[in-house]
Length: 574
Image (cartoon, rainbow, N blue to C red; front, side, top):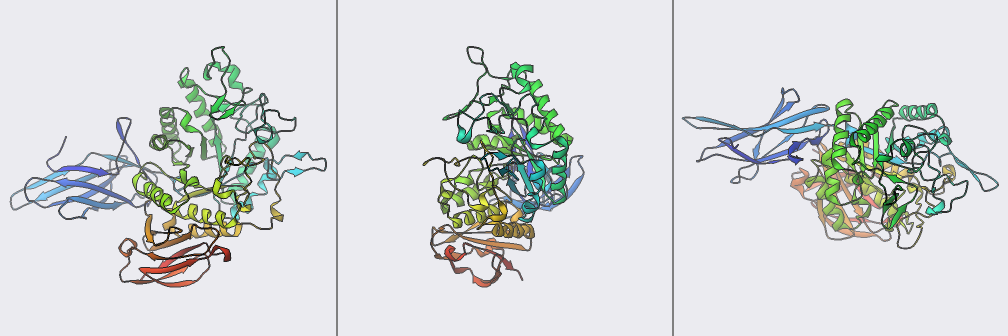
């Protein structure tokens, strides 16, 4: 019901499933609240945003400003102090020589997750490849958790704070895939980790090839000592050999002849994987998934990368994630959902903390600008992006030339456009060979075989640049925020420019999107959006240490052939 002072157009406010659901935040993140407030007559209104904690106690009050006089459009910026559930209300009043009128809005929920839900540098590797050895007879000895742990210090040294592992469970034997997705595997083929389960166990077991549960626990402890969190894959599917197949046949889809249907994502076929049917025993499946999550959480796992969540019911995720959040709000879920935007957004609203995105395929200036604005402004209340430059499934066309400058500029973009970004092992070595022309699969994909890499003998590596990028991110709070992204005009489609500011920390980024040739252009900085007065300012490039005297209209030249792909500049504020 409308109050005496009509308050409308409140943003951010997320209505989903018949109710308002929490706006996403982390402690101390700045969130702009806006609304329209009107009252009859000519009386002047004042309003404020009042933030309450879950118990209803007032946490803070924030006066709202009339940002466009005559429109009754009001804005304020709020933040919350710590992890937890909150709600905000907009309160308005109108006072004249003869009356005071009060009005208030509905309650709008807000949830502050721990910082990792928004900010992180992710690295992915297959434990079986780390420390693997190619023997003189051509066979390969698999790596394991003990050998893989030896790689953790180097990953930490590059500045990554999350190490994501593909499934570490026993791998099925039936219909096992061979090299390059072959249907005729040899006895030595290790199988696809996502074909989960065999006689050694299912989703709560360790692949014996990788070691014991104690070995895994030591691996997690080693990571923790280096400041790295381990993220596990939560893939709700099985191999034909999984214990569930015999114990719970009702959990699977049946063909007309009664046999279980394997997974398909046309034109891809996954003969070694059975999808789950959520219709016949929803509660049983939900409770088993909760048990699995709780089990790994007891092993100090607080991050789960969820495989293909868009192929499971959205209400299932809303149910599971709400229960887990009530038990342990430190657990973070990343949705691996390369699908229709509406579904990706629905998963965010259902409770996923982060999601993979279309950044992997956004390459030109127009695409990056439009997508960046969408993510930072239009969907940031419910959808947190994680920009991955590659994955074991995706060898993007723009990387297939192997040009190191392309790898470099994509790393710069991913690490500075959003607070969370990720890369799959081998990116720093510019691994790029495609399985076939016109496709985005890797040749000799690590999904199907063990890859032997000798990191100590790498002749050229982007590791120094990646280390630098992650260090810059850690030292600049502006790059750890999503909602503060602003694009600036350039006269060349080959050069993109954007800024991020949080308090006194102002970062300017200019990137040459052409990996082969030098590009020069005028950059037209929007000074009001930067929060700068005057026409000139001093900017220090955090990549090469050079200091520049720039103005609102600055000519910039970037030559990747001499190692200058981008400026990441910190502005010296008065």
